[in-house]
Length: 500
Image (cartoon, rainbow, N blue to C red):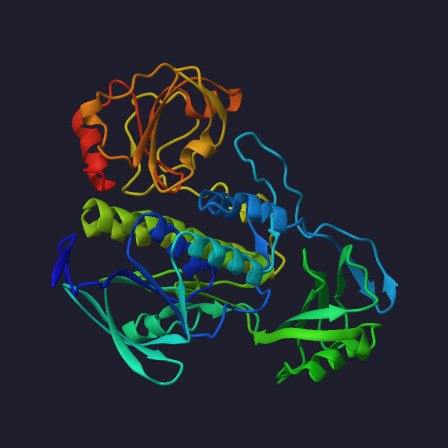
């Protein structure tokens, strides 16, 4: 046996085992592997999920993917949402915007949602994971678990029925809304049915339909039907709601073709291919806990959303971004594992708020807009947010998302803040002539990057004001202090953040 951060493990055992290689599991694996955390990612499917399902990336999620090294790839392969074109049979109506158009704002380089099919988002994350030295074990499902003070003992079953055991310091359930791990732990979900009617979603190749619009037949017999062109592909995402009592949609290619022919002017033969199809019912539910000992829940395993607001995949990826650095601090830098309690503290209330938002959008009580971009999400009420300034002269507070800006350092070097933040490290910034702390007070180690800012853009001056700011690895302000901040308070905040 060897000891890893106080946890006794068999030689070669895993620090974190992740169940589920969807966007959430892949994003978390990328973050952990780049931190040097021994990570194992298992997926019961034989391949990555093949469908479009979550096809939208919100601005904050694009920032997260940029931090993981995928910013250029996401912008290259994604596109804007097309305008929606309603039809009444064969008669087109007036096009309208799917969501309120995003407006460029200083400090927000990504201000609008991007369309990227879920299968492609996953493929980009998988490529990034492999480039970092990680991998996915396909055809491997988690079939049992027990945990004790030493970690989690896990039973895995392979595609041929053979079983094996694994040991991990921590287990993360990213295995979806029907989470096997959550069920094994006995963690319940509280929520409601948002829509009792089933919806079919499919990726189809369609002839004779222009790709410049998202086509909708809102009043078709049997329920509304939409065909949205998927950017960067020759496919459309088909969504069809079934409002007839007792309707049970079929997902065969023949049934999908008949559905399109029955609700639109298109012929069945116009549906050239059906690449993937599935049926769901819109629900909103929140897990009773996001942490159970050494097991943590993320993504749909922790919260299930109506797809109406385009929030599920995005909220899950941001769960991963919040959890990744905390696991890294515990497993690589000696932080007390009580730091992991703040994952639930910070993410559960936000997930509850997003559930409320998506339900309102589903019922037409709120339009998609600024709130769905998730750029205003912050953690001011978190126990990790240390606002130590006596008279803050900027708009930012500890816990807020740190905005981007072009800056000039005290050494005369040009610096873009998002470039400074990108990576698994912490960033210490001094603005407005504030002096950086004495070197003895700065957390040691290469995982803290320090910058004294001489000049910056007007919006950043108004946002940051003067002071010293410690930016967490997930881009939120952990500490906001000034020269007069009490040294003991700063030290206590660093301890809570896992840096002492």
